[in-house]
Image (cartoon, rainbow, N blue to C red; front, side):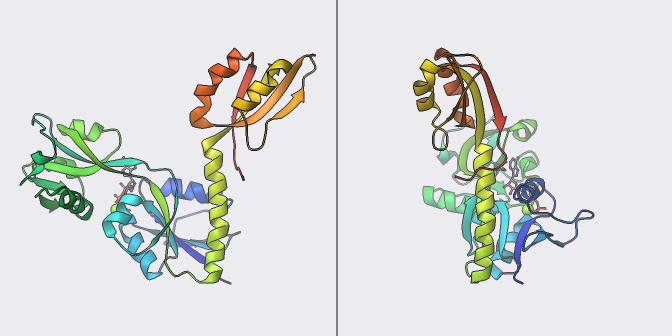
Amino acid sequence: MTILKIAIQKSGRLSEKSLELLKDCGIKLPNGDRKLKMEAQNFPIEVLFLRDDDIPQYVEQGVADIGILGENEVWEKNKSVHTVENLGFAKCKLSLAIPKEENYTGLSFFNNKKVATSYPKILKKFFDEKGINVEIEEIGGSVEIAPGIGLANAIFDIVSTGSTLVMNGLKEVEVVTQSSAILISNKSLNKEKQQILEKLLFRIKAVKTASENKYILLNAPVSAIAQISSILPGMKSPTVLPLGEEGWVSIHSVVKEDEFWAVIDQLKTLGAQGILVLPIEKMVL
Ligand code: ATP
Ligand code: MG
């Protein structure tokens, strides 16, 4: 039987979310100690636990068929793999930061400066395109301490809240790019593996769509049905059920999480009451 091999991060920021995604897709992995690899009990997939740096290479070579990792790592390693789907978690920025007391004058500030980073290829490409000459100092980790110890004038690193920068007396001056977790695949999967990937992808999309939407229930006067339906079109059209009290209905629909607060005021103006918003587990359009 054909088995699709998926590489995920062994231990780090992506590990838990990657396992959670597989679980939400209904894939059961054996309990117990995390070994190098694990076969799922109810889906033709085997999970390989690796360092994220190694995943692009392994997927290119076909040691793993697919993998979950940060886009930043895929760009940096520059291997020949397909991007299959954006997974939406592990969102972060890749930014340039300088000591906070420096006066930032724009990108030309970096001319002939030394910049420490774990992402030399992404950084070189950026500055080459801008026509700015920098010296890149590649270091493996704790990049933020480089200016403080006199190793570099600036850093290029992952930033999420910026608190690490502040703690090290740095300020973010340029966001070079944004990154989030993606699913990548080998470029020449055979037909059987492609079919398993498509099955998995169908489930991933259902989980992802569900997480971006909420189920909404509310009570409204019959006279408001048409207007509320146009605000909450749902997947096809909202469900409208009669209430025990004459002249009132219960309306059920689906609303995008990021639009929810914008529509709530309109719903209230139209006379909606008892508005409930519930999470959705899976959603197939
Ligand atoms: P490994 O030991 O596997 O090489 P690592 O130390 O390189 O791990 P992590 O720090 O676990 O990597 O980060 C993994 C990925 O998570 C990064 O490549 C990036 O895409 C994302 N990431 C890193 N830091 C953050 C953050 N602060 N917020 C959100 N996402 C982040
Ligand atoms: Mg790494």
